[in-house]
Length: 155
Image (cartoon, rainbow, N blue to C red; front, side, top):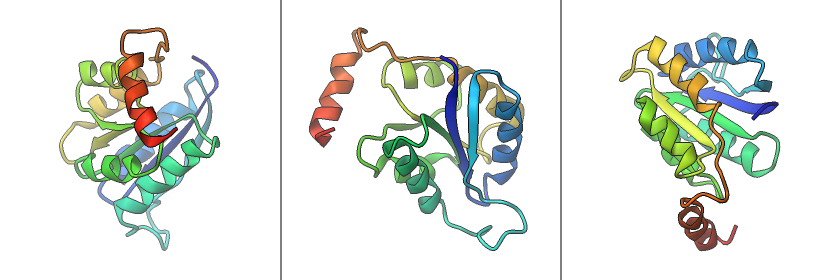
């Protein structure tokens, strides 16, 4: 998959990892655009709570302005819960390679979340790079399961 438009976002508990992954993805030839929705150190919105970040990222994907998102908070859980509130969005918190792989291949997740307080920086950077390399196969055995979720939401 090439030409991905990827949203990166965090609250103050994940800003350092978000900034590092922004730099990595800006240099990745598979990425057409990085959309950094903050937070940013020194900005007035630095203390913006995680729900706003997850919701904003999910809305950008839902509205067709982005393909995927990688979000950070302290644990990765809060931004995942928030993003999952947006209709049609599937977000997963993953801190290991197998879960990152399965989030896309088995679940067609558009949002990966991680926690700055629970995973090391180099692992988070590696997982982000791995994640953007996976593509969901709509002919896979998992497609019927994902369809159950989409049908439930009416998407």
